[in-house]
Image 1 (cartoon, one colour):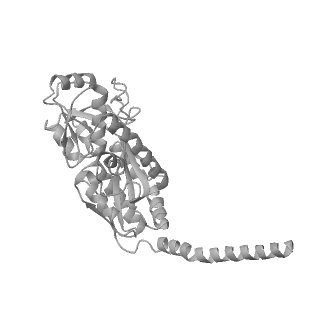
Image 2: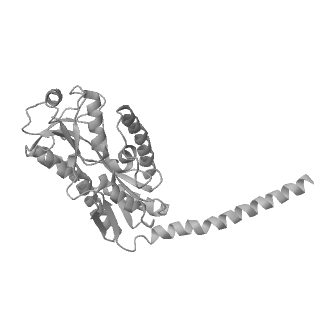
Image 3: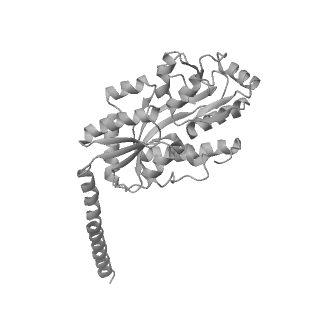
Length: 333
């Protein structure tokens, strides 16, 4: 009796396994077909800021190389507004077929969700991370004519001139870095909003803003030309290409270690095979010597790697910065 039951059980299990294999085969084939035939038409790649800023430049480099490798044009589009949220919302709502992508700075994936009461996308659920393209520290930048030579003097100057103390910002990463700096130094800088990193830099150059924690892409040419002065980097250590710039810790301000980054994401629901194909291509692109050299001139560092890893890192960063928002008692916007 027991032997007969065991034979029937083995037969049933075999049937179930065969059914499961047959059922999963079309799905696996569909995934493979999606990747094999992709792309069949031009791809749109959006960025949420005006031309000339760091993410715009990084995105255009990736778009050009990706189009060359895939054999289809990658049309780059600036959809500026709301700290990058207009472009993010558009991509989040796009058809998940792999033909609409977003150059997503850390402001989109981490800072906006912790700063705004209403964000028109879900940072956890709206996107599929393709990969991290690049990361970079921010740089505490001041007008070259401002009568200060280091961070200590800047703090004293800001406290002595509270009506002039303000900072430039385009999105959450810049705002919260400044708010963290204020919290650590007891200063009271007020925010002046701009639409792009390039406009932020011009705001500092013209004196419209006293300071800005700015990403390096568009900043470094102005720094080399002497139009602005950089007092410190938010990196954990000095940048190899700019060893003359001290860290915030070296300038006596501990705890202001901030790294910006630029990811490539797609709408949630894009077939996994297409995401992996894009991931593989961008991982090749960020290792190309000419791309590495171009990034180097902007003090930007290529990253790459699996998208899932960077999605987990973004979630951890959101939790960390929510604590900063709470401790600094920053009201949600």
